[in-house]
Image 1 (cartoon, rainbow, N blue to C red):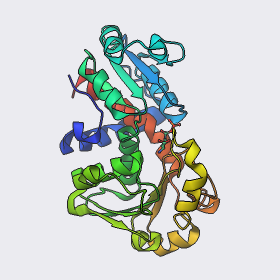
Image 2: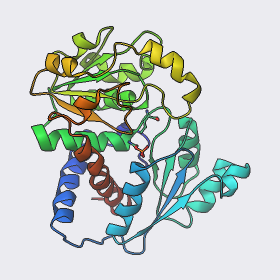
Image 3: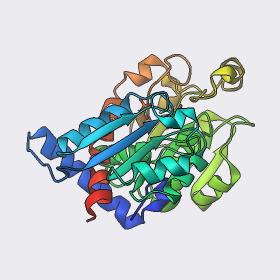
Length: 300
Ligand code: CP
Ligand code: NVA
């Protein structure tokens, strides 16, 4: 039984296989081809934080594959009334075929997976967001070909998304130039996973120069709402502007996992501009996760 808590739960070959399959599934979906290998299978979805893309893509994806998805909010389940994660894991995983969890501390996912009889998928934790990276890598590949040996610029917070980009750089072999202010840099042990593929800069322009992809995320992630004002101050100079995209060059794509705050981490003109592929990126959550669900529930 396999879990998908971080990108490192897959081998490099498996990641390439998932990305190829995701594009195949996208093409089949767009052609209206019915493909229902997960008939009778159920995905449990535990959301301890808000979501639009993750919920809709997993729920629609399971329906399209012939299965069913169950939305489980802590507000309506015994998890929210203190039933231990380990007990919930043993009970729920006897009834469903996989469990997706969006939570705060990554240790909750590990505790659940440690007691689960079914595969567990990380739908975002404070540590990382591997499902988003599958969609982002798929999107880059569809627009520009293989990402190996290309250059990605991450501008802003050294957060869960940045951590997953670091893992991806180390696994797939591309250069990642991170621009982040002091105090908001990625965790040192995650940074080490990128090896010499990852460099941290003080200046957004230095990181963006010559990048094939510029990407960013909100300055205050879910759970950090009370830090909004302090973060707005700290991240001044780390907005993806039209001028920063010019510095990267016209070959550069722009991505954002969304939701975006126009005028904070990205200018509206960049988000809506010709280099932006954010809507393809969001759509690919559906296709990439359908590939992942097939992989975890059926194997290749
Ligand atoms: N990008 C992403 O995970 O979006 P949601 O928070 O809407 O799921
Ligand atoms: N870093 C953001 C990503 C949202 C999809 C957060 O954790 O809120």
